[in-house]
Length: 406
Image (cartoon, rainbow, N blue to C red):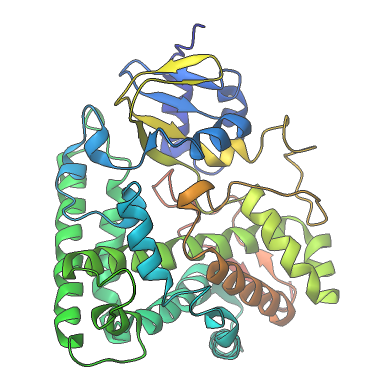
C-alpha cells in the first residue's frame, strides 16, 4: 500500500497559524490513515488505527528504541514511567499508584472534593466587581497548580519558578531543527535539568521524614515492589507536576471556551448540574487538552492498516483527530454532551492511559460547574482567543471574558 503523504498537511497542523482550528486539517489527514513522512516517520490519524496501536505490545514508548532519538530525548536522564515499557513501566506505575489512587488509595479523589470545591470558590470570589477576567490566569491555571502542589508537597510559593521551567519545557516539545531557533531546544533541555534538580532537593528533605504528601510517601515506601530510586521518584514527580496541571489548565479553559460558543449548553449546565459529568467526557473528545502523542517506536516491523512500519521508526499519534473520526463517532464535529458510547482518546488508551485522569476529570467537573453558575452573563472578548504555541498540549494562553451589563 502506498502511504507516503506530502508533508504539507502535517506541516500546516504544526504551524501556529492553525492552532485555533486544526480540525479541518485533521479531516484531510485522515484521508491517509497511516502516512509515511519524508523523514521516514509515520503519522496515524484515524480512531481504529490509533486505538489498535496503543494496545499493540510491539509498540515502544522508550526513546532508546527509536532509530534516531532527538537531542532532547538523549538529554532526558532517567525517564518517567510514561516513557518506559513493561516490565519497568508496570513496576513504577504500580509504585506510584499505591499513593495516588485505586486499589491502595481508592478514596484519594473523592476525599479531596471538599478542598477542590473550596479552592474553586475562593478563586470565584475574587471575580466580584470585575467586569473582565482572564479564565486562564485568574482561574484555570491557579486551581490545578494548587492541587498538584498540595499532592506532591511542593511549596506553593515556589510556583513561579517551576511555571517558567514548565513553559520552556512544553515549548520545546515540538522543536523543529529546520524552522526553530536552537535556543528553543536549549531552553527546554535546561528547564528539564533545573526542574529535576529542584525536585531532587525537595526529595532529600523527605527521606526519613514521612508525611502525607506524595514525595514523602514515595521516599519512605517499602511496598511489595520495593522502593523507587531517587532518580525514579524525581522522574515521577516531574511527570506529575507537568501533566498534573498543564493538561487540566487546557481542559478547563477549552471547556469554558466551548460553553461560551454554545450558550444553550451553558444554560443547561446551570439548570442541570449533573450534566457536567457527560459534558466533561464530551469535552475530552471534542476539544481535548492533548492533541498529539509526538512519538512512539516499534520493537520490530509492524503492520497497521496494511502499512508496514519498520522497526525503530518514529510514530506520531494524532489523538484529537481520532476523536473526531466520523467512522467512529456520529456527527463528530458537533459538541453533544448527551453523546452515548463516548470512548474518546482524550486520555489516551492502553497501558499508558492517563495516570491522573480521574483527578483531572473531577477538577474540570467542579471548576466548570461552579464557574458557569457564578459568572454574570459571560461573553467572549475575542474569538478565537490567543493560543499557546504548542500543537501537542493545545489550549488558549489567555481567555478574556466580560461579565455583567453588556
